[in-house]
Length: 106
Image: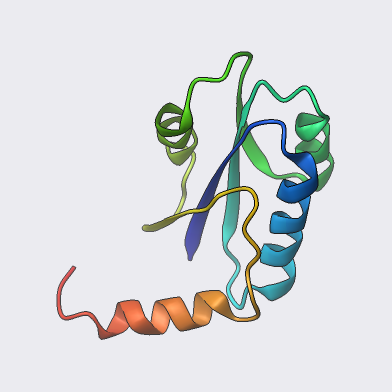
C-alpha cells in the first residue's frame, strides 16, 4: 500500500526502533525502504537480517540524493518519507489512507 522511505546515517539504535514501530503498528502490508549513508554502525547487517530492501553509499550523499535513490525501489503508488528517529503509532497508516481517500483530486 505505502512505500516508507527512510534515509539513515549511522543511527542504528533509532532506525531499529522506527522499523519495529512500523512492523508492529501498521494496519496495511507496507514496504520499508532504507538508504544507508556510510553505515559503519552495523545498519547494513541489521537490514539484511530483517530482509528489508535498502540501498547503500560508502559516503554520505545527502538527504535528497538518498531519498531519490531508495525511492526507485518503491513498488507502491504512495511514498511516505520518514526520518530514522520517528516512531509510528498503532494504525497510523489506516488513518492516513482514510484522509487520502477524502481528497477530491489526485
